[in-house]
Length: 271
Image 1 (cartoon, rainbow, N blue to C red):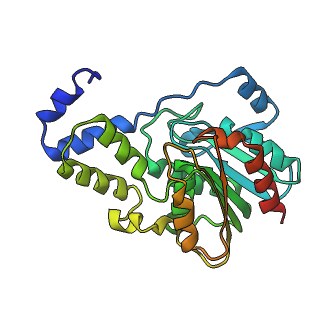
Image 2: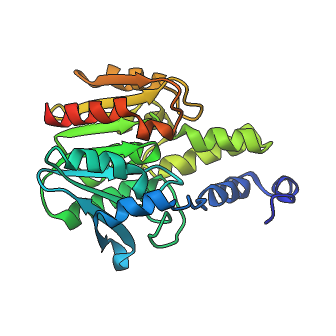
């Protein structure tokens, strides 16, 4: 289905079929190119494979307590490499990876369930106690949801520009296509199913339910046009002791390169 004929084709379909078609469309992740400077970062880390049919590619750097880092929807693991190297220099064993359907991992449809399941599979593969999880955007939401759904555990969690619930693809659909409220409600149901939940529970922030034992840090950019920085405040309301840092002029992706976020991450994990 080409971009030109999408609106006309959707208009001739039943609402349930429209919703499924839109979900299929957003599940095809656009590949982020690997820049030369990023490739250099990968050569400085040990590469390994894990997951179903060894279809996930991962990189490890450093020695010490285990820190697992997960990128966002449409990204790739190397985006987390600068932060991983900074943490490795302070005494951590950091692992970052290409989630299913991203980067050099096996091509496949992408959804929030990708990050939820990959977090659990990587944890099992590592086979050691995980000290901290760090997640960007959809990867952050997925890793937090994986706690209740797949038993993922850590002493500390750092969420960077992670949406409180999966509204980003929904808002993308609303901006791009002229679809009815009925279709949008059906899309909500399909998104919620990836969390084995309902939309109301997700909207209430169920993915970030405090476990009572772990520490949480939230890093968001005030000028992020994709994820609302106010999500940090709402999440912190339900997590006593959660810390918040907000940057400016970084946007959604460049926050990963922020020296302020890097220093806060090192402080949070070494505190």
